[in-house]
View (spheres, rainbow, N blue to C red):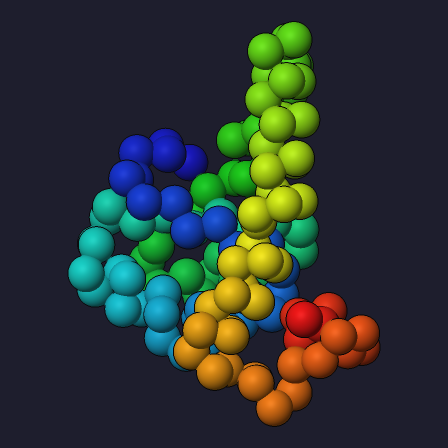
Length: 117
């Protein structure tokens, strides 16, 4: 891993990994960005490394700092606070509502937390 790529695509779970690869998103990004793109897989996503289509594969664990000082701890706590209030989930719900995605399925208390408005 040289980490020289300018765009890191970090995929956090099997669903995201499969969606990005099977739908051709990674292939399209690779076509547009060339060697400027690198992919990182969190958890058990390493199995996709062989089929990365020539995209540099980052060692995500190596990207994380092993020791944390006071400033890093404050930054992580602030990041967690912001993520809890304006992270992926609230943004995804706003996007769904704005564009009408899953409107008929979204309801308060839905079993699927992604559809729990």
